[in-house]
Image (cartoon, rainbow, N blue to C red; front, side, top):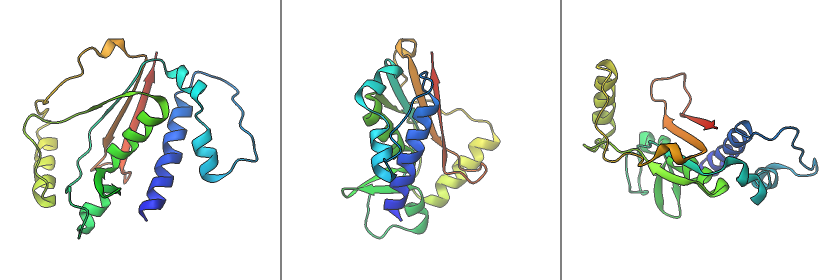
Length: 169
């Protein structure tokens, strides 16, 4: 299941990166398939089209322990080499690696609880109140970036695990 998520995340990442592209009529060898196609879609020269890029993301894995995870924890995390990453964190790091972007994790000043029920209750309350929690840090000079990828979970949306947006100048 986690391998399937990794493949889907990679395909999603390549799709997003292609959608953000300013290059028209790019072609790809039709003999490429599956993972080869996804990994070769972004060659070194392709990363130049994003200019100075930044990946900004929010991710909330509910545990940092990969052993004996609950169903909720498994649904919000990917385990890579024994390290627990949130789904959005995993996709953000994949984009960073593909385009050579800098990365910035959005973190609230007051950390969120990792207990699933507590987290859901707090997030629901914040949503009702249209709260905007103070951030631990901010991007120093966002104007210096040519391309910004923004990723975040979509807890009460349309069933998607998260969202990723890309804005290029």
